[in-house]
Length: 315
Image: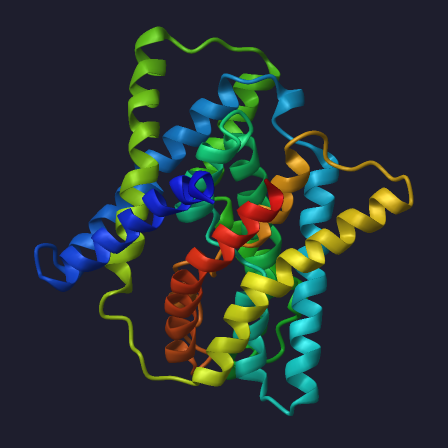
C-alpha cells in the first residue's frame, strides 16, 4: 500500500497545494487561467509533439487499445443516458450526464499518473486518449447540449458533430499530435537544440497541470443538482472502468486481440480518471453548469480513494 500511496499522494498533494494557495489568495483565480493556458497552448503540445516525433509510428497507436477505449466510453454513455431517461430526467440533465460519464481528465491528471506507473507508454496512451475524447466523446456530448438550443432546430445531428469535430482540429495539442505523427512516419530527425527545448517544456506540463487542477476548483459554484453530480461522478469513477474491464475480459474470452503488455491495465486506469476539468464550461447552454462544477469537485476529491484502490488491484 505504501508503494501505491507513493504514486497517488504526490499527485493529489500538488492538487491540494494548488487548492490551498488559491484559497489563501497567494494565487488568484485568474492566475489559474494563465497556468491552464500555458499547459494547453504550450507545455502539452510540446510534450505530445516531442513524444510522437521521436517514436516509431508503430509504437504510437495500438488499434485494440483505441477500439476498447471507444467501446467502453460509448457503452458507459449509453447506460448513463438510458438510466437517466428511465428516471424521467429531462434532456438537459441527460446531455451533461452523457458528456461527463465517460470523458476523463486525461491531459491534466491521467498523464502524470501514467508517467509514474507506465513511463514508457505514457505519451502514446495520452495521445490515443485525447484523440478519442476530442473527436468522438466531446463532439457527441456537445451535440446533445447544442440540440437544446432553439437556434439549432433544423440542423442535423451529423452536421453539428461535424462542426464540433472541425473545431477540434484547431486545438494546439491535436495539431501537435498530427505534426509529430508526420515526423514519425517519415523518420524526420529533430534538431538537438529544438529537442532539448521541447523536453524542458514537456517536463513542466505535469506539475503545472496538477497545480492548476487544485487552483481551478476554488470558486466553482457549489450550488446545483447534488444527486445528478454524484451520479455522474460515480459513473465516471466506478462504472466506466468496470465497463472497460468487461470489454477487455470479453475480448480475452473470445480470443480476440487485446492491448499488449502494460496497455491492458493502462486502459482500465485511463477510464478510471475523474471528470475532465472543463466540464462546467462545455456544459454551458444546458442550464446545469452548477451540477457540472459539482461533478468535477466530487470526482476529483473521490478519485484519491478510487485510484489508490484501483492501483492496488492492478498491482
